[in-house]
Image (cartoon, rainbow, N blue to C red; front, side, top):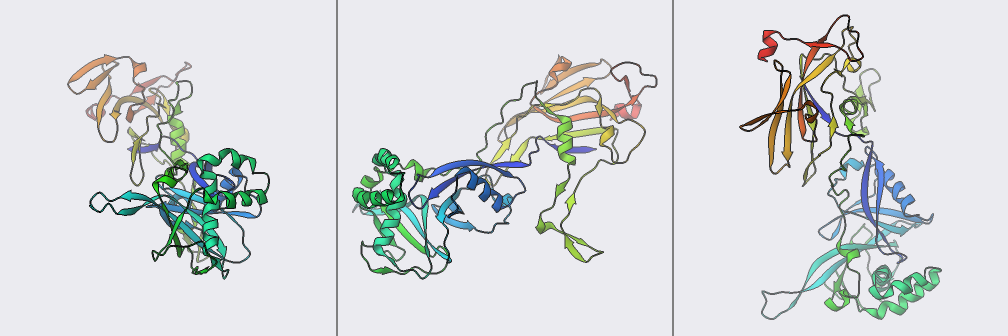
Length: 426
């Protein structure tokens, strides 16, 4: 008796991700790409590769950022994109390809913050911004000077007073490298390892563990140095997908109720993790699932799925759906083919106004004896025109099956409503 229909079905998904370079060739740049909704991490990598014009000698590394540090590196190319939520924050690091396995150095930002509770006004450091990532070949000796050079190189494009100079030195890598050495004195970075030891500008070797992301270097930003950097690049990491109300559809291009039905009944391939066990060949097989309508009731209630949920947010879709008031024809949607046409007529609509937090329900109901529509709004009842029944607030649609008259000879199918005592009570 009930059908819950999606308001929109798309085979693609929009994702916004910021790409960070490790060679200082460009500031952090956000890209919005379209990927298959049932896609894998490799699809996202390919889309970003095209968007940022990745060179053959480079590769991309995707990381999930939580609490101003890398929480997880998404290295598995077949990882389902559905595991990435809309309110996740992702950073992508543009790194050179290495012949040997790489070790990573994660640079975490901390900014100066005066502890108000401490009368001595001692300086405390709080986590801040989006971490930077550098890589080195395993078993390669790294010095304190190398660490400083890596940090300065990645921060160079973010310097406020280097915009013009940065544009001028894009022509050659050697010129860029020279300018890093020249301008690293613009600020004096304080680099601290995870044992709270200051990393000096020396040629002494720094131990880099072989395991991934084991090396953490803190960049302690003084207030004066932080003013020299365009902090917008470090502070604002967008959500993968920021919800925005969809653009209002004009009556010329509405979302059809039939399109919602098509989306509901469309065949959906199952992901490899949901393989079906074939009793004949005794193996797991990738399969697909599909819903079909087998038999339709006398009274059909259609629920439009206007509410969407993510990990921390809830949204209502205000999409206008163009639903038939007369002659909803579901004959071709029945898998169990029968000779009788399946025609429905709308007799009531439940409307929802507002949001998830607070809302208001009203109803449009057609009194069949009067052949007239009324608006029921709490204690207020008023007559309305039939064309006003359709609105973006429609939430639940109530249809009743009608019987086709023999000998109908007009362009519009002539229908009569079954008016038995039992259906009237219903």
